[in-house]
Length: 504
Image (cartoon, rainbow, N blue to C red):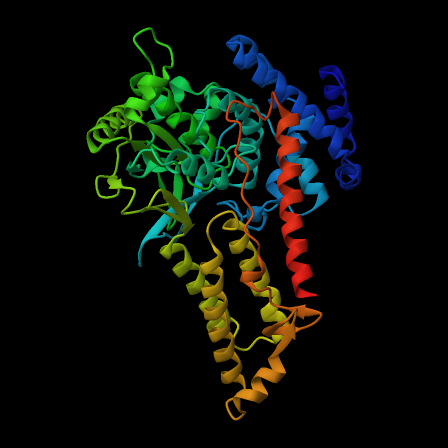
């Protein structure tokens, strides 16, 4: 469908307001996604060739596309935040509202409404809150629309070893890369643990306005919308709001370039080419996930030099390193990254779930079992706990997690027995076990019965995560990412089949 057809279709849809519910329910989503993907591929190709005027033209074409607007509205009405309104209290929960929203999206004369300020608990301590800014549904859809046009550029210009909030990449890819950097006998033994102070809150608006390749008027609205707190409007002079759909892309683009700077200093020879001899001299490697990063080095002195390079890079963008959390550590002392603990024992590096990760998970299980769910039925409790357990073991299934899974099973059993004891205080131990636990797959004391039971963490097999080819682009090499996705899914499914066979 060309642009003329899209304009004609848009006009006809606007004239048929009574058919809006039917229109939304009858959208060919495969066709819409395909149209958007083709434009994104063209944007990525133009960006990779340095044709920035063509990038801008294609971005305008995408943001004016009816198909892209449909995809953007669908995204904000199907994600987890679809039931959370902004300051206007509006939700798009009917086909008519969704179709009306599609027709209302336009960058011409766009004015963003203030964000609704909410606070969530921050990891790492009590009484610490992380501010979130909740945009209105219309502003979310606008962000999603322009994110579709910006993401292909971000993938082309992004660092090789940046893994957070990127298409086709995940935390497990960062784990594998870091393990590769540290896991050999002669690998680096010093690590710089980087932490950027208030990354999302302090990114310079001036830098973003100058360097982000998108419609500047719309970007300015996203950045300077302000927020409402206790009925008062507050101006935003810096940062990107945590909670906005486009914010992770902007933050990633602001931090892209660290990898290349480190290469120029520690991997290039005097001729400006990558030299393995120079690289072996310093053993500097970089891995970043969102605003958390790790740099390996052959010595503390090299790590300090890398830290200075990063600090200077961040200063231009209005950011700085947290001196309290940015540490230089020996690998034998161990360090935590993305919920895993890395430590070298002998000539081997062990990567396993961190103590803090296990503690947080068990705290959540304790809350659900002994507080929130203390009056629930067994069936409801199993239904609530199952995705939490499967999610945790799925996240850590590639690491050295067997001992952790065993501990989790033991702790959860103790909590569940406390739950049963509270419900039946006048019954003996044998009676409670007989009522709530069964023998399944040769394992005693499985909570539930044969047709509805709580999964055992130790049933999860360890499945190594395949390494990512970092020179591949999801918009330019979609076949690679599709094959890789299928391969990972098949391996994980096989591990579950093995676990199921053990239970039968």
